[in-house]
Image (cartoon, rainbow, N blue to C red):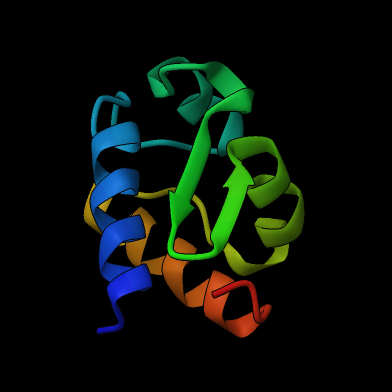
Length: 85
């Protein structure tokens, strides 16, 4: 696992881990984010907000998610597929 992926994984688990799982859609995740949709994730030379990420990854996610780990794995795979990391 690349350093950027590992750093983002940790940040995502921290940010989304407080959501009330299972989550049915992206909006279920917003209350868990410390700064709402403006929550920023940064690792290496990569930086984006939760809103930017959601807009680009909508087609990569398959809701519902039962655990934060399953959600984060799909987010990271989607970011890689879109060339964002």
